[in-house]
Amino acid sequence: MNPEKAVSHKAAGFCEKTQTLRRLRHAENSLLKGQDWQIMPKMSTHKEGNNTLWSDRWNLFCDASINLRYYRKREWFFDKCEKTCNLIALMGGSAVIGNLTKHSLLVGTLIALAGAAPLVFDLSGQRTLFRNLISKIMEVLCDIECHNNLDNITTDWIEQTKRKMNSIEACE
Image 1: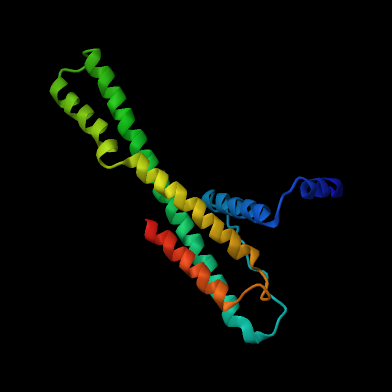
Image 2: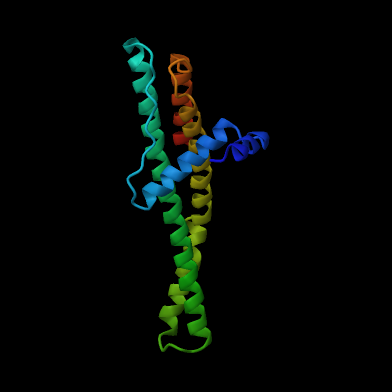
């Protein structure tokens, strides 16, 4: 990167968390595309006595990454279900209006079911719920990634992060 651009980025107010969030999104997109790219933690130069804190941090990071992938897949699923129901209702409606089918009763029932499914199962609400969970878990991941030195990691911080993740999972 050009040093002048680096200075301009800092002058524009890009903080470390924003850059970390971008790295996490890049890693996630790479994984979704099938590339084998992973954010590896920076090992600290401290003594071996604090390895439990580091392994706890790494376990939190792995759990949050798994939750992120799960929430992304659930959001995708509900989005596709809603779009499929809307497509069926639209195509069926045009078939009935245009008298393109001899089975109007069957097509009419299919249209009614396809139109009612998003309302009954609240597909858009579920999609929105998982979108909100994604943003919350991304904040937790960003916080975990910013704590990449043993000087920043304490047992209180680990417990606080576990409570955040549990509250996010409880929202599901």
